[in-house]
Image (tube, rainbow, N blue to C red; front, side, top):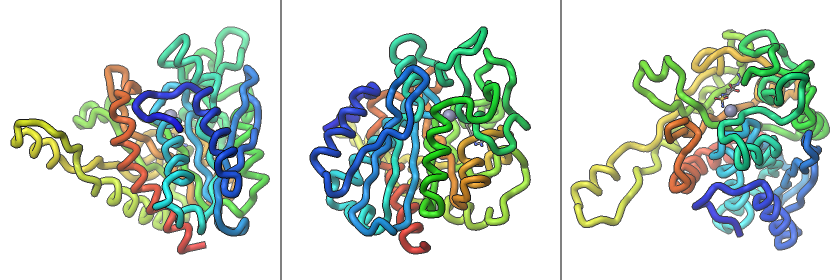
Length: 331
Ligand code: 0X9
Ligand code: ZN
């Protein structure tokens, strides 16, 4: 068991995966897909209760260390798929490969030393860390990425310089066209454009490309599916409170569900090459590839209060159900 009332450390998430593997050996297995720079296991949980030929959904979290809601929500997905009988169809008809913490060194570092660390922890010559989401080898370093080690968006000396990104690459190449959908979970900090538009934190459903403003050929398919996902998330009612003042409660509960902006990364957010989403589609051949920017919060953007983990998880899981049923029905 794991709790969603606090953000969990890497070790607790690892323990939870082991516990599931022990308790549900027929539907779960855990594999190490690679080792981080500092030697931590990069763990993947495989979940499936049907045919091994079922279409597969690949999910990752925690590429960016400080975006704590990402590993938390991805762990929630794991719990719902494995431990909630009501979701049995989601694992009977599709298989899942889920990596809750792709950048464990960075994630631990945000707990022990620097809350706002984003990158990996590999050592350069003057600064630490590479932005994992600029390190994938598809139009690498072409735009929105830095060649300077000390920058937050440092793309690395070379594409796939990081063992963490190489681990995801090797996994995608090994599974080939069994993978039908890729979801990578992030959390987004406001930029000036959003501040001026009064949307302090962007929730986004992004599809490729991040390296160009041109759209992929199948952008209409990517967009239509995102529209359905967004509707499912937005339809989750506002938070209910049990309090004496009925009027106040009604006002809070009536607030519409969380909305997401939909579009290609370049067109609705900014141009940035070397992201995992672009590589998984452009090289890995997974047509349906999305970056999901979960809600931010707190003064620095990444301090979404722990009390929000469950509300965000509940609503976002409704979107994951829509993705799953699309894969089940179309492959
Ligand atoms: O800049 C990023 O890597 C992502 N935003 S975040 O605030 N979580 O850092 C957006 C990535 C979108 N995808 C690509 N640009 N390929
Ligand atoms: Zn991110």
